[in-house]
Length: 265
Image (cartoon, rainbow, N blue to C red; front, side, top):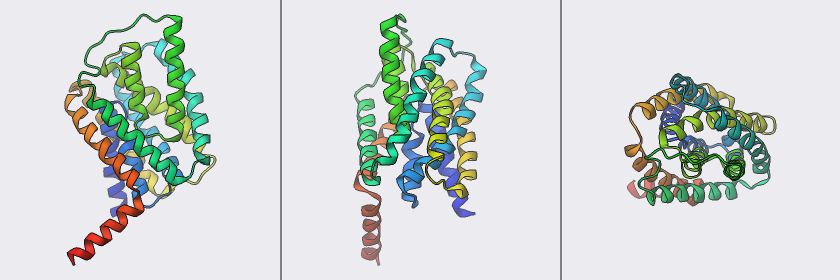
């Protein structure tokens, strides 16, 4: 019971944070599953299934605003979903430790980029949707989809940043598209692909799904009502810390914990 409560709390806050900031559930939830003892691939598959509930919770809230345009829905589905499926196959051939280090480096890079962009996504300045704009935009979304299916950490926020940078959306609009299309459809595609090929920690899923569903709805509500400046700073700190922990490695952290306990004794 204590384990289920811990999983629910981790899942709720990770997914509320993700739905509020436009991505990042994997930054907290996936490393937590790894540190609790799952291998990278099992943790990734379990996390992917749980984050589908994030998409459902966030979608229920964002659809009430009726702010999504058909153009972005189509381009994100057609470009992103194939990339996710490809990425979910690629990750099965990458060694666990290599995947963890790559995950850590990408996470730190995400935090540093955010630090260097203090005004990111604060204004709505849409670009003209030309054929060239659409092709380049879709190509990058395809690449992010591959990352989403394989390394997963922060890729929702990569989508949010790309929608802001390339298409000129503001933060709230970009977050809405990310949570509905990445949180629900991309994650469902990755979850299905991985679930058919690797084992799932089914005993943990009920708590994770419930936390993801409630966290997704609450986080989406916060993003609509409050904005993003304060969460941006917290996000930068967490990305750098979690990324550093993954690079150091779970085994090293465990050994350091044992040494600290022995020193204290």
